[in-house]
Length: 332
Ligand code: ASP
Image (cartoon, rainbow, N blue to C red; front, side, top):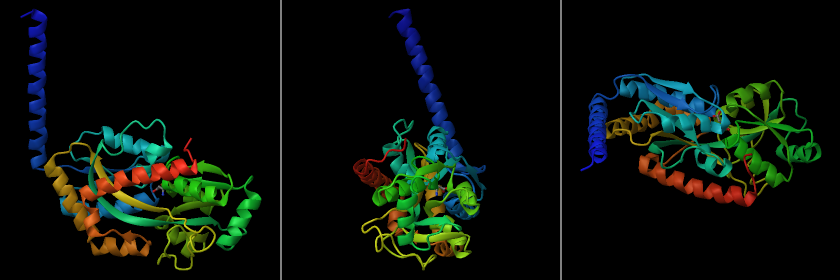
């Protein structure tokens, strides 16, 4: 045997010993899981719809797990910066994410995504579905959706809309809506619709499509104009808004859904605890009541489980891939 091959063998056995030692370290560590705070990455700025959903869930899960679940807002690039961070994080159960439908549209809207949205993550569970709304700044002249569409067609060249970056739900909804209306309007990207809403309230841009979790309060307070919901059904938190489907755009339907993921390969003990804690959070009366007041639509419990989330994600990647391609929309 040559000295180089015995050197390679020594290296290999060293590497195997290291791998065995580190997997022992991970599983030994997992036994007491969680024994330190868990970082919950929200790939959008504070104060927006995903942040709202994540903080409610985090509060309940913290109680169940006996450790603080700390929300960390890593917004930007339509959520892909935060999700890339989670994909690369140590798979030890101490870094997890709550994100939404944009996780399924990112591969179709971003040409240079650095991670695989299905294979680089472990599913923890689907959380809730959230209708979206077309809203305008308070000073915008139109008072209903038909007037808004007429105004858009007449003012497309000078109108502006806000969104949470390429591939975000608000961006996708805006693209689909504008495509159907048949106009091109300049978009302004934010790190989440939390900061976008601050600017809409200040009248810095004209309109936005965002989840009811972000728009219900300002619509009710008369601080922005609500024009329509993007689901085929009316939404209880904003009962005066008609559907786009029943008014100006028959067949139109975009709805956001939120879910929780971890980096691929976290220890089973951590998965089991996170899944159980999420399920408890979804049955927490405080969470249920708050979600209802914000117009979210509960997901059938069987569909909140990890395997169902994975199938849902795969189906959504395919569905949106086809819709986005057919619509000829591109994030960049
Ligand atoms: N609602 C945002 C979006 O459009 C994200 C957020 O701030 O939660 O994707």
